[in-house]
Image (cartoon, rainbow over all chains, first blue to last red; front, side):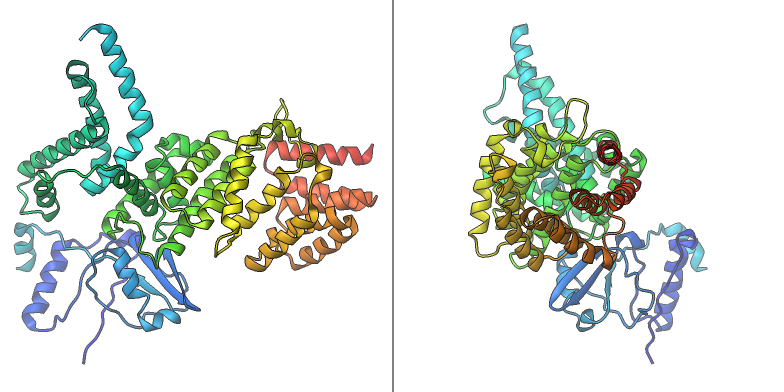
Length: 120
Length: 418
């Protein structure tokens, strides 16, 4: 069975866990065969939301704000830039009924010494 | 080079900065892909010009020289940073190094495209509206952070932080520097026009404080509006420029020497800027004859009817009501409905206006809007219903944060009791 694990963090706790620790854990999951895909994300102010209603695309800054909407799925896409990502997101079928939040992914920032220490 | 020549060259550079720095900046952003680097490159370029031109003379194509100099200095700087950081091959740095030998395309058209790209980027809907405004004023108009903060009566650090975050988002979410594709253009142009109009209104109405208008912001907005029309002559862009010009044409007549408000029907029309009116009216005609007539064009058309009336009595209120009907059908809003009620009162008498306004006020959408109560007060005053007029003026005064507008209402209220 496949699962989606979505990490939610409050602003105060955002940097609580060092990237090297996350990298080490991801590596363990890769070794054990559990890892299918995943990525850390840039903070929430880099988010963009897309909704389509009556054929009109509305792009707004920030994450979706409706608290009734809960996570229903995810796509991890490849796109040239945010404009292309928006063009892809607006065609995701549920965009007509809910909100697609587009968040850029980032790389873990790890220097080799710390990563080795964390993995042992 | 003789001293007089040096002075002349320096003055030339100053003039170039005033006239061209924003265009050069826009191109540097495209070439370097980064606001901070582009800003550094811009000041480096002008500093180098100050050093070299008095000795070498002003180059054949100064703008292109400055762009090259800025870019070269930035690439040099990035090379030095690489050496310090022992970075692995960073694709962004390698790319700009590779571009070094590529010939610069500085044809006039392309430079203007860079400014347009910058405008669209600063007004991207992935940025919050107030962020779009701050970023546009800073990066496209070249206003200092303090000036923007003063204009919007917001603390400078707040504006500074907005701009920093905006640039970070552009970088992290990879908002590209590009003019949107044909299909996306109408919606994206909407964003740009909204920002420009927000800036204009802030300068025209001045939401709070002593001065009834802040001329510099309106001038910036018009300058931006002209740029957008030049590069993107869509009907609504022309409509917005017309609207701003027509409003601006009345600046000199809108307030007296003490800064007190003078209403449209009492303004000295000889003080209206006829050049703006002519230009605005021509733009309106153009926008109205296009395939898609939009709200800005209609609002501009209404302003044009006022502008072309030699005296208040000559105002064609029939046409104005008709235009408001169209505007309300196209883009209904309580404010449009309010203005329509005022026009109705002019055409058919205050009784009719009051009836229309009261049904609006019942809905509740205009409750917090000072002008709605001021209009009600005026209708009641004209009908001799003084008690109602008094309470409506009081409500309007409560809601007014702007000095001149409040004093105007207080005077009207005092006149009732006399």
